[in-house]
Length: 180
Image (tube, rainbow, N blue to C red; front, top):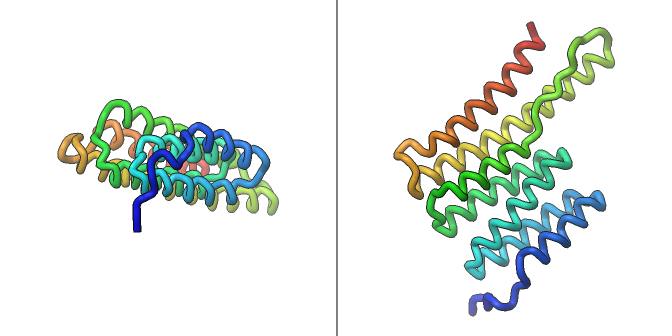
């Protein structure tokens, strides 16, 4: 079986623009599946930089639309592609990882609980918070493993450690302060 020719794929930006329209049309899950399959084609053609552009765009756009599960999965695929492409740790990659990290939504825990409707809102907010924390922390832990393997300090990027600590602290403080 022969490897696909690199010239057979259009520039990544063409796919990014098409996929943005799919998300803006409200088909976030369908867009996620397309992001995964399109980026996989670029990876198999060893066009890692373009695959990263597609995955970064998709992760940020999904997270902007509060599609945390989809965005987190694309963020994880971004890190997987860094590993597959043996991309070295660099300030540029750190900036890209930070951009995805900053796109993750933050807590929205209700200010008080007074009745059953408020309790329902609290239950929903806590469940959504768990999904956000799990998705973001998984993304950041994978990023740390990549940074250890591909050139940051032995224990990983201090900046990535700080992002993970900041996110965990900000998300847990919101929930804990509400409970008190």
